[in-house]
Image (tube, rainbow, N blue to C red; front, top):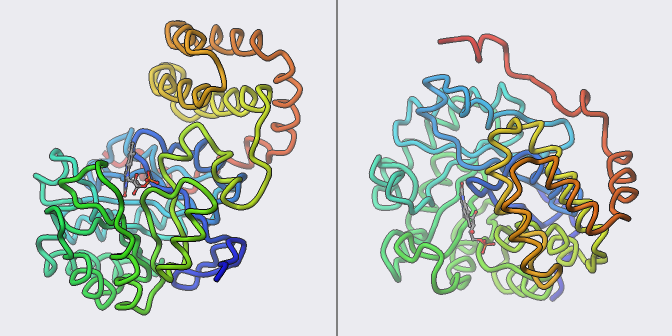
Amino acid sequence: MQVDLNETWEIGGVPVPSRLVLAPMAGVSVQAFRRQGRRYGAGLVCSEMVSVAGIAHRNERTLGYLRVASDEHPLAIQIFGSDPATMADAARMVEAAGADIVDINFGCPVKKVTKTGAGASLLDDPDHAARIVSAVAEATPLPVSVKMRRGTADGSRDCLVVGPRLVAAGAASLTLHPRSAKQMYTGTADHSLTAELVSLVDVPVIASGDITSRARAQAVLATTGASAVMVGRAAQGNPWALAEIMGMPADPSREEIVAELLLFIRETVRELGEYRATGFLKKFYGWYLGRGRFPKPFKQELVQLRTIEEVETRLLAAAPGAREVLENLEAGLPPVDEVLLDSLPISVYGGG
Ligand SMILES: Cc1cc2nc3c(=O)[nH]c(=O)nc-3n(C[C@H](O)[C@H](O)[C@H](O)COP(=O)(O)O)c2cc1C
């Protein structure tokens, strides 16, 4: 059975216009990445995980993660933490920021996060996990979704116990990345668990893990009954992977690749400022120009350059036709001042 990836479905009343979701990825899912994902067919995008402690302390960098652009909707903002009341307060901030969905992270396997009782460690404590979800669901009228792993230990099936508990506590959707926390990113995602989870809950389930092609997306949707697939690593520096999954042309020219990279650079500089963007962008050069698209020494040369201006000049020298492609791309986007909505109340930034 072929599933139509272009079909609209919904999470707690929020329409999602395709069955392709762009994964939240720390250090990757900036606004430029999310807006690009929407342009290439993702029906839903998500912020990277945002610390509720950072929100509670009004940490400036953390609050920056809550900035929503007008052309990102529908957008989920993902929060992580372990204290239900702090999570509930953060959910109210997410709502004020203009997100459509509050996503809760019960999947992060990184020690720095799990040792605070957040992320995947909550899969070991279903009662507490359910308390968090119900506190968040009571705090905001927005739909609440949860992203989780299969469990903490290898071979764990805990997601099948925890998932239905979270739905009973108010989760309007679940995303499953069926690797254990211990596995990190090794081995493979076992989507037979996704199928089991789908059979146990009456809310939409999103399948995350190892979706890299249209064939794989179709197979996972058909065999699991999931409402959507989520794509992470395959889309890093490669929005054409999203296009391919959606059945769109996905064989970019050198000029198109360079133009998308230049747009990404410009938007990221605007979002993070030049100083932070300079370091942040380096990994993207390899992602965009790799996959046999440009010779290796060219990527290495770009990473060595000190300023963004030098990077832009070098990229345009390698693909002069990219300038025109970029102009066309920019002309198709809404004007900048219409995009950068600052819907957070001023007091949010100034509140100590
Ligand atoms: C660099 C990186 C950062 C990630 N950060 C997050 C995160 O902030 N929140 C989250 O729920 N998952 C995070 N993930 C997990 C992804 O959302 C996704 O579930 C996982 O990568 C499997 O999907 P993939 O095979 O399509 O990459 C991250 C993954 C990567 C590679």
